[in-house]
Structures are given as structure tokens and as C-alpha cells.
Amino acid sequence: MAHTAVDATNPAAGDDPSRRDFIHIAALTAAAGGGLAAIWPFVAQMNPSADTLALASVEYDLTKIEPAQQVTINWRGKPLFIRNRTPEQIAAAVKDDHAALRDPQTDAERHKEGKAQWLVLVGSCTHLGCVPTVGGGEYGGWFCPCHGSHYDTSGRIRKGPAPKNLAVPDYAFLSDTKVKIG
Amino acid sequence: MSGHSTYEPKNGFSRWLDARLPVGRLVWDSFVDYPTPRNLNYWWTFGGILSLCLAVQLITGIVLAMHYTPSAATAFNSVEHIMRDVNYGWLLRYMHANGASMFFIAVYIHMLRGVYYGSYKSPREVLWILGCVIYLLMMATAFMGYVLPWGQMSFHGAVVITNLLGAFPVVGDAITTLLWGGFAVDEPTLKRFFSLHYLLPFMIAGVVILHVWALHVVGQNNPTGVEPKSKADTLPFTPYATVKDGFAMSLFVILFATFVFYLPDALGHADNYIPANPLVTPSHIVPEWYFLPFYAILRAIPDKLMGVLAMFGAIACIFALPWLDTSKVKSMRYRPQARLYFFIFLVACVILGFCGAKLPDDQVIPGLETFQLLDSKLNSWVWLSRVATLYYFAYFLLVMPLLGLFEKPLPTPETISSPVLGGDKKD
Ligand code: HEM
Ligand code: FES
Image (cartoon, rainbow over all chains, first blue to last red):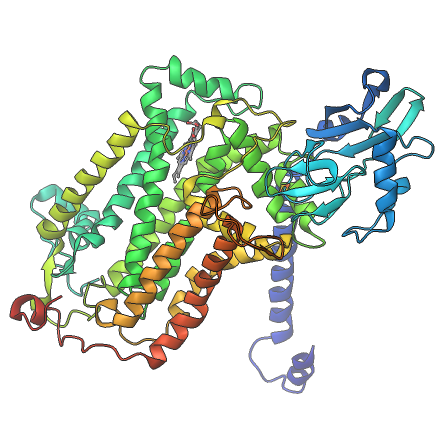
């Protein structure tokens, strides 16, 4: 501290400025640190609680889904799409792998290897979170009615305000007919 | 305040209290003896009306909270219980729901009054900013209140609006998760919204006190925009302003009652009588009418982040108004050109309101085929909203700063009383 040195050359001053400085700094630090420490839990309580985090995975039996059909299930309070794609739909998606995409991804990156038939997606429009309707839009994938986003049969954004492809959640095939999401 | 106080305690008790806590004096100085410009018109009665609105929302809200349960499983049913079973519950809820709309009607008139008569100009900048803060808090309160019935519009409205914050790069997702308390709008979201919906109106009440305090420091503006110069320019608040405010409030209450008793659901949306279902979005999702212009601005811009920034920017412009307007003349009564741009601004806001309620790609003029311009047909709501959005921002960022430099205002009267008493110039 610069002025400590200056003060040292002037011991005539009545009180001891370096001790007062110390008290000021200590008090301010304690107030700032204490304030932050006190605010922390009040903000942290807003984040997902332990039981919300624990509810994070679901299993689903794929035999219930007919070809060309989609089911919507509730996963962490959000809709989850499981779509049983027809060969034509898969072909349409693969054909566009190198089209001008806003969020470039190939179809193969969006399903598990050897399971091109099954598309598992978070059913929240990446614009503002509405639930897109299956089969709609100009690309035959999904159409979001809220502000008009079009997704193709791979769930990739093709037109409209949404910035990203429909998200692929973490999931795994437990067997040929069973998936576990989350 | 107006310098010295003329309060004289009438009896022993008020003398005793006045020496200890002079609330009687405060009320007397603020609402009885307080000098108001003698030429105030009915556009000046909306401050009183707004206080009434706040009182109505607080009282009906606190009573509703005695019957409402903030839980995803029961919220919808508890509102139906209020509507069907609670004695006069239907009345309380309709008062509260329509009261929110009335509140916004009044606040918009109050704010536009301020713009027209230049009430935000020096020395009233802080007064104006405090008003803007109240308006922001009102929007937050009304948004969270609308989520509470947990119907389809409640739910998906909350999804869309909270997702707006997700548009911010890097921190967006963390903010939405923090706001939701989960991975989607859900139980924790409803609970915290209820808590905050209860809290914010009291914060509004606090800011209202500051707003009125600031008002009483600088005094009211008036239709001429000329500051009062002598006693001839003012009249005491009571009885002149009290009676005029009271009369306007009565008319306002008639309008309010018309909605509550004859058109209780006219301003709401039918889909909100369907319980929330996270897996299905209503085919046409619209916010409450008072948010429509901002919603239209959001949708006018094809990029998500830019759309969100434009929407917040639209509100920021209102805050910045005192520093955007360069004209020394307060009242547009003496600014014919400013008046023209102001009325176009009004029209632009109404157009934005309509645009916000429509599907972006639908035709404005039915049947008229037009060419494709970038992402939509020219004859579409989205293009109309782009034109209106452009004007909205141009009004604040171009017209306001430039007009004051180039226009030629009419002569303003010497004092308030000269046109009122002397008839120096007709209106
Ligand atoms: C600035 C003042 C306020 C505004 C603008 C406001 C606005 C709203 C709105 C728009 C709704 C939805 C109405 C509907 O469609 O059902 C609502 C609901 C509700 N509000 Fe408020 N409110 C205010 C103050 C309060 C206060 C002070 C409370 C006290 C706790 C409260 C308690 C409630 C409750 C319990 C509901 C749910 C019941 C219902 O939906 O009718 N409000 N509020
Ligand atoms: S939420 Fe899907 S387009 Fe806006």
C-alpha cells in the first residue's frame, strides 16, 4: 500500500493511519465476503433440487410404436419424441445431409449406429420451447406452430426462427426393443 | 414540497401527534393544500386511477391467495374451486383478472400522457424513471400472475417467455434452469412465481411512494408545459383535484364493472380453461393483450437473440426518453410536427398490438396475393410488424433527437394563467 510508506515518513500524525487502514479493509472484506456467502444459498436454492435431479431417467418399450408413428412421453417435465421412421423418411434425411443446414449435422450423427429407424429427440422447439407437431412443415419432419419453425425428418432446423436442431438427449438401447433416456 | 406548511392541528390529540409523528401534516401538505396547476385536464386523473387499480389488485389478490393452492396438481382446480364454490369467488377472480387489464389500460394512458405533454423533461427525469420501474414491475407481476391458474396458456406462455432468456449466449441455459428450478417449467416454477407474484405488488407500492415523493418535489407538469410561476397558476389539491380525480375514477369503475359483469372473459383466452399439458402446445399461443406490441417486435426479427434484444430495447427506449428528446418545449400543444409523429407512433403501437395477436405468415389483406420478400409474403403480419417496429425505434432514436433541433415550435404562453384566464390563445 503506497500511503503506508508515505505515512511512515511522517510519524508525527496523531493517530496511526496504518492501523485504521487495516480496520477499514478488514471490515469491508468481511462485509463483502459475508454478504456474498449469505446471498449464495438464496440463489442456489433456485437451481434444481436433489429430487428433481433424481427423476432424470425413463425407460420405454419400443414395440408399442408402429412404423411412421411417434410417441410423446414426459421426460423431466419436457416432451420427448420417439419416432419410428419409415425408410423413405430416413432416405429424405440422409439425402439432405449436405444441404445448406443452419446447424450442420448428418442424419447418422442423430441416431444410434444401426438404429436409423429410431429417432429420439427432446420435443421442445429450440426457438422458445413450444412443442412442434409431427409430420408438419415443408420438410415432413416437424412444424412448430408458435413462430413457424420447420424441422426435417432428422429433426434438423431448416426454416424459421429456431437456431438449433431438435436436441438429442443422452440415451441408450437396453435391448433391441427398449431404450433408457437420461 | 411547497415550502412552508399551512397545517394547523385542530384538537389536542392531533397537536400531540403532530409533535411526535406529523402524519396528519404530511397528508395535509400532500393531498389537501398541495398546489396543482389550475389547467390540469382529465389526462391527469390517471395517477389516481392507477392507485385505485393497485389497491384493487392487492385486496382481491390477498383474498384469492386464501383459496388458491400453488401446486401443479391442484392450482387449476383451486381456481375452478374459487370460480364455482367460494362465496363470491367468481367476482373476486374476475375483478383480479380484469383488474390487471384495467391497470395496464390506465398505465398506458398515463405514460402516453407523459409523452405528449413532455412530462419526462427536466426536472422530472427521476419521476419518469421511477414510473418506468413501476411499469417493469407491473409487467413481471402480471406475467407471473397469468401463470398461476396453470392452464394451457399459463403454461406455454411461461415456457415461451422464460425461454427468451435462454437466447443470451453462454449464460442463457444456466439462467433458464435457475429460473425454472428444473429442466422445464414445472412445479418449482409455479411455486416461486406465486411467491414472487405476492411480493412484487408490495414492491410496486414502495416505488409508488418514491414516485409520488419525486412528484411532490418537482410539482406536476400541466397541459401547457410551462411551470407555474405564481399563486394565480395553481389551485389547492382539495377540493379541485380530489373531486376531478374522484369523478374520473367513477367513470373508470363503470368501465371496469362492465368487463367484470358483462365481458369477464373477453380479454382472456379460452385455452386457459384447459389444464396445463406440457406435451401439447396450443395451436396459437398469444400473450395477454398488454404484451402484444412487444411480442410483435420479438417476432418481427428472424434471429432469436436479436429479437429478444429488440424487445428489451423497446422498453429501454422508454427509460431513455428524457435524454433522447432534445426539444426545450415540453407540451406538444406547441409542437405541431411532434404531434404528427406522436399520433403515427400511437398508430404504430396499435398495429404492433394487432400483429402480435396474429399468425406471422397470415395475410393482412385477405385474398391479396403478393410476392415473396425474403422469408415471407409481403402481405403478411410479419412484414407489417417489421414496418411498425421500424417506426417504433425511429420515433425514439431519430424523431425524438432530431425534431427538437429542426422543428419550429409555436410560441408558448408566458404563464399558465394567461391562456386560462386571459384567453391569450385558443387550444
Ligand atoms: C400489481 C398487482 C397485480 C397484478 C397486475 C396481478 C395480476 C394477475 C393476473 C393477470 C392473474 C391471472 C388471472 C387469471 O387469468 O386467472 C393473477 C392471478 C392471481 N393473483 Fe395477482 N396480480 C396483482 C397482485 C396480486 C397480489 C398482491 C396477490 C396476493 C397474493 C395476488 C394473488 C393472485 C392469485 C392467488 C392469483 C391466482 C388466482 C387467479 O388466477 O385468479 N395478485 N394476478
Ligand atoms: S417456439 Fe417454435 S418457432 Fe418459436
